[in-house]
Image 1 (cartoon, one colour):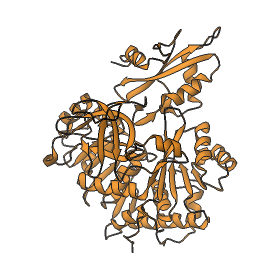
Image 2 (cartoon, rainbow, N blue to C red):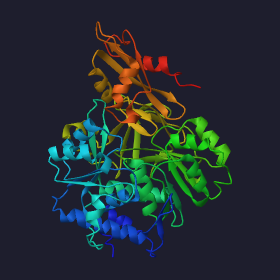
Image 3 (cartoon, rainbow, N blue to C red):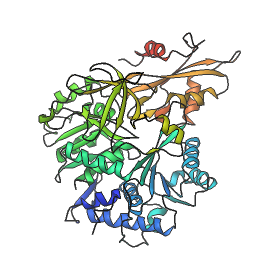
Image 4 (cartoon, rainbow, N blue to C red):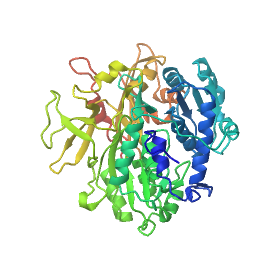
Length: 512
């Protein structure tokens, strides 16, 4: 029986499982079904495996695997056993993984079999004691060992402020920071969204997002589990196959890119969406053209919301008409329990309609950056508000609009791309003097990076060759779509590169 007094996030989620544990909890796109009992038993077995390793309290479990239901079970098992989950993007390469493992010092690393030959040595060199494999075909050493463990497990007792997960999010310096999220951070956000978005036990969520970041791992999975709702599970997004399953579903969550691709499918009709309750979009700005086209094709108005790795969800357009209309180009109202304010450079409140820096407070706001106390202090105000780095405004009705990012962040296809990190790699290439990365509009990805590079005296460099080199070192979503070689970068009187001018010069690059 679940101890609901236990602040462990898994205990909160487990308490919401339906009474009929043999009912279907997850159906995969290829027809494999998992019951609620399967989720309970499998998470217990993996939790028992982790506990048998005699890990220290608060040990980190780093995971870089392809999406699968078993990968989700590993996440639940990590919570259940009381350890800290550390998801890593499957696109990360050697230099990136080496940094994350070196910084987080995980006791356990789980990777795909295909990557074990290079991830394993990195982990071992960093002092990781245990390396397992897990693949998306229900194979791997993790499952082989877990199969020998008991399927009964007492949920580890946790306090609200104990760490549940660490999510790495880069900064403008290019050095990645580990955002520490507590059990309370995640459970409070899940409970608020359950009510605000009207989750029901008979909902069916199409889960087509990756599960290494907030949107797919926390918002989508927590939403379904805490309401006892079934999921239709896609290991990989396929627009035609997702559209074909819409008549069976009631909830869909996606980044703008997914909506653009589904709009290209002839099967996307009002009839196909007749059972749908809500379409939710986030992780990147949704273009008004996409917002309007979706409403015309499906009869549904997309609900856009706003969140961050450090805070989970902060704002949302209304679900219920009683709360107001869903407005394209906005991210709605602050969620219940979230305090959001807009302040100018001097720290004074901005009047309605005036753009300023967005700062937030609430039970969902993270505990700080892993092993970066000074950076943590810098990112919070004296009265405890987190400086999001985004700039925006309130309108006269209280809707929040995000108008830019003060930290120069590019969001491409829902993924965060930090120019300073890519610039650092380019500047180390032979013949390169300096580089600047800017984000420009793109119909499919919302925004993509463009590199502008200068050569060292006497050197000859080629833009396509630079991109080819980057592809060997960085995740694909970080790679600039174009690279231009110029004589010099534009600068202001203080010598700072004028990125605003570069964005203006290249803003029409990908227009049809």
